[in-house]
Image (cartoon, rainbow, N blue to C red; front, top):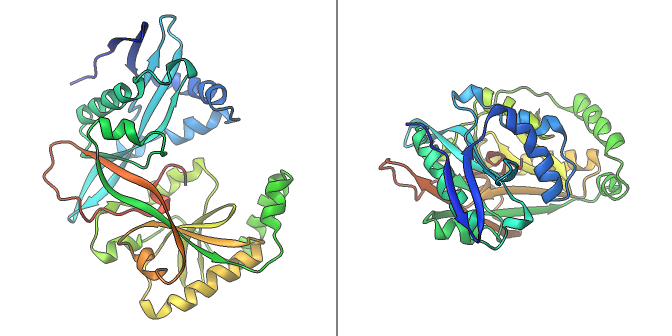
Length: 319
């Protein structure tokens, strides 16, 4: 069944909840830049929501005012997941934004309900999200189930802090070419990646070649070095989002590899972002960590047990 446009009167505002069209994706740039004081390029959302490789596109709800202007958005990034050795199509909630005029009026909860209905009608098995602390209440009120939470392990690195300097003085235009040069000299890369999660018999996102290619809307790096394949990005240090499985006896060698890479790239810290009960969680359990955002799911007509569902940092849209 097709999603039908809904009209809601909320706090004396006449609002229309509609499925986004492909031509309206460009309008998200203006909404985000104004509502969040950001500088997002016009190509960003076009790349991010180019999900034709999954067979599903434009799974998002926008809120329009009486003039037809978009003043709110909540999107879904469809992706394949493996659940109990079955491959299904699920989706991740992404890019929630409301015009300031809508805040504090319980509009967000209605937006969650509408996008959930759209996802169900599109045949997705379930939705998942790692909301900001401010957004948690909305998903709790919409009866989403908390299944896990993120934790970030940290390894300090003694090096000249090129990364910090580039961030402080807005020198990314010079630092990023340096990163590419160093990686080209010391590593190999492609789009083939075996997610470490599945060697531990748990359920999560399938990191296919198409999935890895789709991630080009952000700046991240998939590299092979010293026999290890790992996926990372660089912001305030190196952030490891995922790694291909390796035997436990190679743990020290992997730690030395990523610390050496951090020194090479001038990064003062290595962060490993994962959830409980993953291969990375076990591997880095002897390092200090901080707990992060909660993870919630909403299921649609499936009987799977989700106690063992886990994620790594690269499974989320911000990676």
